[in-house]
Image (cartoon, rainbow, N blue to C red; front, top):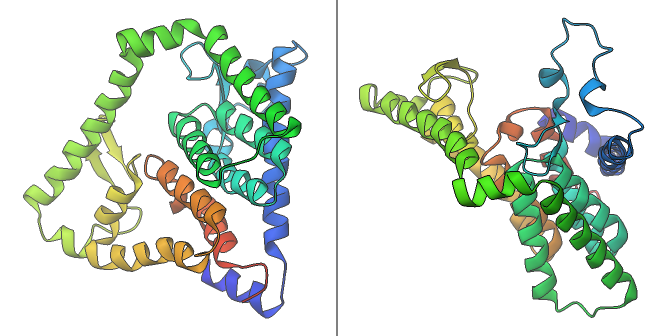
Length: 289
């Protein structure tokens, strides 16, 4: 990541433009897949059936499908979907509210609890903090977003009934995470020195939540402490909080980055190429400083 950032700076490449265009393309694809499936033009279930059987769709693309047990029925979660949180607040800062609304809808369609809850929460917080003066365009965007949310709840009523009344989906997910956390604690119980120097990047450990050996789990920051050790993790932590100081005067950029970090806290996105892209986007200011 550092090498790429140095190349970008040396040759004055406007890489943020390419990153923004890529995220915009992802936003459009996400919405188009949902609309075409809803209209019966395509079937998400059969969308990747033409690929060779030896290709792992989940490993290559992410979680793509439609099921009554998903939060929003659709789960169009590609590996770079969390980066849409940065695009959302970029549009907000540029006052492109229609595109921001569509971006928020694509995050909702990603279908994970983190992608649904965190961007919507900080979007509402940003609106309240800035005392937006409503006009017809902004009211239309709010109406569109509310309409999508109402349709999701009505169309997937059984899920929300189970989630609120029975809470069975949350219980299943929480049991897996509790198993991860219990196994994480046991590592330090039996080998406390690992807290200092870590088990190594990409190392495996047995998780009671997964019932097998895994090399990463959903609580990203805890997992990186396990892999790196506290000392190296603190250096890494300074790296990921740097954008808050770099963009001190931009509330939108800070909220976008905070939203992404909260999504990353339940998803190991920062450990891959998507995390490197996000960091480059935040550290590479538009004025090439």
